[in-house]
Length: 222
Image (cartoon, rainbow, N blue to C red; front, top):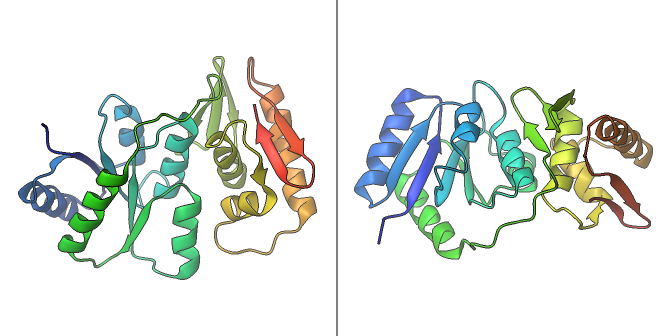
């Protein structure tokens, strides 16, 4: 039986080397890339058992990379590494689809223990994908049917939260946390305005699904 494969996404070459060597000594197979774009290009062919993703990547926010993966239906467990350890930052990581969170500096032993726990708990059932929609976190763009629509960072995060749960009613408060991860005060009209903008952009993409209102709850995409 092969050892679990961990994909490391870290732009600091020295830390990337330390993680690759240290996890290898603990029995993991490791592959490493420096940017979110490289990771998305390698997935899903790489088929890792877990991802270790730095939040502060040079091309995009690591949390946006995670959201893009979740929107594709990828359920690979993700541990975020970050220098920011405030509660709002940890919550933002979980709301983006992350499974665990380690603040730098951290103990390699703790990372190993958390990885082992995630790999043990990981399920294999895929999440449904909505048509041909694809999110690009580096460009903050949405593609479908050969056509691209640019998104603002907030639009990207809201849409990613919906795409990660196709056919489900996503509550308004969950969409607010996803769209404004740093704890901004957002009223209902603001969220509704962003949903209206996303509906217009989806209508401009051939074959794209629609956003539906679930009265008294929130919104769903299907």
